[in-house]
Amino acid sequence: MSADDGRIILQTEALTKHYGGVHALDDANFILRDGEHVAIVGDNGAGKSTFVRQITGVEQPTSGKIFFDGEEVSFKNPIEARDHGIETVFQNLALADDLDVPSNLFLGREETYFNLGPFSILNERSMGQKALSALKTTGVKIPDLKNKIRNMSGGQRQCVAISRAATFASKLIIMDEPTAALGVQETAQVENIIRGLKERGIPLILVSHNLRQVLDLVDRIWVWRRGKIVGAVDRDKTDGNEIVSLITGVKSGVDEEAAFV
Ligand SMILES: Nc1ncnc2c1ncn2[C@@H]1O[C@H](COP(=O)(O)OP(=O)(O)OP(=O)(O)O)[C@@H](O)[C@H]1O
Image 1 (cartoon, rainbow, N blue to C red):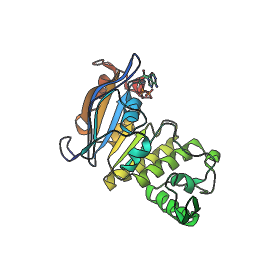
Image 2: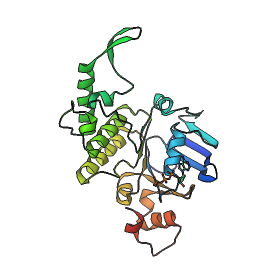
Image 3: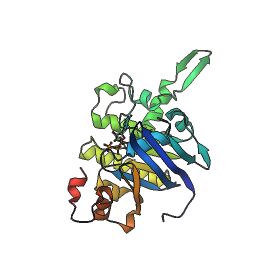
Image 4: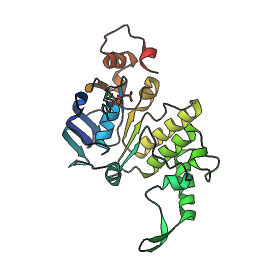
């Protein structure tokens, strides 16, 4: 997809977030088109997660506008964003440690078959079946669905969180460093989930420090430096050197490996 084709699904105008004297995000003008997969890259502290928190309702911006799916929005919390079809995988995952996989997949969207005022019975069978089918669609292998999240490896937890987002995302999925703590195999699983989302036409914002991954997976790369967007380049028209130069503000002679962990 060319950068200028297609309907705009998310747009920010001069989006700004200050924490006291810290200008974490300044004047961000960002565009995401329907079906497009983009990455947000930048050094530590560049403002990437701050941007994600503003557009998903975790925090309220200091100023600026957010347009989603054709209308101006101001989400009060991530649940409101989710109700609009935006699923987010945050760095802290937001899973319930004491619940098993199906319960986590359906957290906040539990299926019940008996509702009488405050009393309801969970439809565990249906949730279990749907959990299996969701994991099958995303290609994730979890050996024991009844296992509680607290007993799983970091990689398995991450896959549960991403499967949940991939299952319910209808209009946009946002992942903040989804593979930062993962091994090679688990990273490959997550990258396959991302490819599946592309096939389904679900737009993606991927925050990542991993240049190989970014160049492999996305259509367009947005670069942040010290709270500002300093460039947006099409995957097909760029290379690692240009991106590293944008990230660091240094024109040449930059060690690519050093800038991307
Ligand atoms: N709640 C907060 N209060 C004060 N300053 C904050 C707060 N959250 C973030 N910051 C500051 O805002 C700036 C941007 O932080 P942010 O976490 O968005 O960066 P990032 O690009 O996501 O970094 P990383 O790659 O390390 O996760 C940093 O200087 C950070 O210290």
